[in-house]
Amino acid sequence: MTLLLALVAGALIGLSLGALGGGGSILAVPVLVYLLGQDAGQATTGSLVVVGVTSLIGAVTAHRAGNVMLARGVTFGVVAIGGAAAGANASAHVADPVLLAAFAALMLLVGGGMAFRQVRHARQFSCGHQSEAGSRPRRPTLDDPIIAFREGFMCDCPRAVKVLVTATVVGLLTGFFGVGGGFLVVPALVLALALPMTYAAGTSLVVITLTSAAALAVRAGVGTTPAWTLVATLTAASAAGGFAGVRLADRIDTTKLSAAFTVLVLGVAVYTASQALPALV
Image (tube, rainbow, N blue to C red; front, top):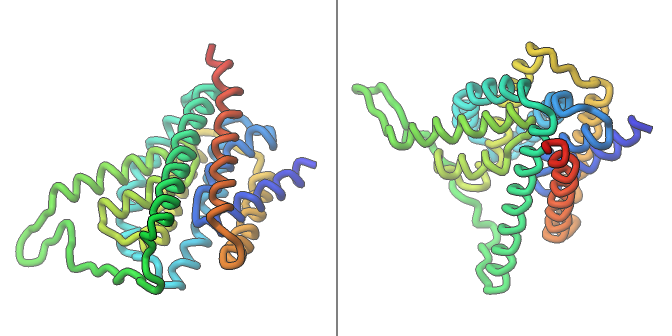
């Protein structure tokens, strides 16, 4: 019965990732805790496997489609590794109720952000502010380096600081909560590296893969061991669901699906808070 729940939950997580392009991984922790009986430490570690594998598969697919700026994604991800390691180490020393309460707050923030974007999109659509079909942004080039050593030392220091801060925050969240952090990585890539949204979404998967791997390596050294059979089942089902979601995206109304997923995230956040907050008292 537990493996069946893992299959169903993993498929739903993958479907949301494939059809909506992100967000589903944030459900992995509450699924592991409340459906599959893992403690918070085990769940946040196991979630990194689900997130990392799913992101790697997505990154390869996006790269083949030409939507990944690999050099920039690797650079941002490498900078974020320090934050991921620090976050993973800190998470191992936090009590389960505190970790789950903080995770509930994060889910509420993500769900609120998703709802805000959907309302704004609906208003723009009703006002006729739609982008023209086929208006794919120009692929960015690497002719604007932040730091260069050609013909002397050159540094765009304000931009370098922005990259360092945003990458470190992304890494901290990934390591501490065991989530992909795509909701933060995508806008960070847009703001810090000036990537168009089309390329930021694909490139973010490279960043998430690197930070998840770094955080998982740290977790492996602090004795947090999840139930690997459940994690493997959840991961396999998520990967399969992701493939199905990509195909469904062209056949279903993703606007309605996104709205339903937002409600689901907010509902799970409220439930997680209701379970975690009383334990803090």
